[in-house]
Image (tube, rainbow, N blue to C red; front, side):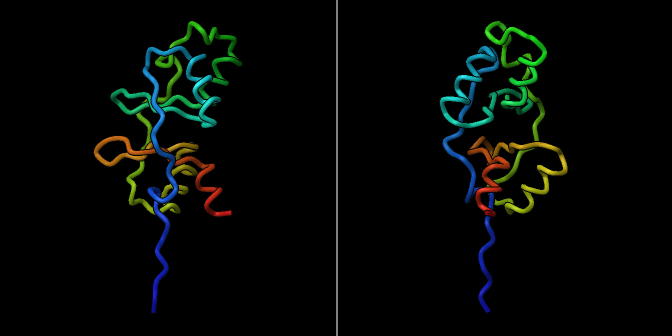
Length: 124
């Protein structure tokens, strides 16, 4: 009886990982996301952080000046992460449980990003 191999985060994660410094402007983060056609960037800080298109949208909706505003002012800190060997169903469950759309993939260091779009694309 052969058992079909289950899909892991590593199978669908985006690489290379796109990062941005915490002192970059929010406008620069928005440009990078647009140019790379992604919706989140990892910010190399401790604790682990990301800036997402939702963070940028919230700043714009609040009338904040995104050319002066720094990534560190709006980034999401202490983010949940996933191991590369985590099953895709488990990553999807984490996203639902925590109400998030992105999971940085960490294996000692960052190795990629899995998004709700990656999960949906794989399952459809």
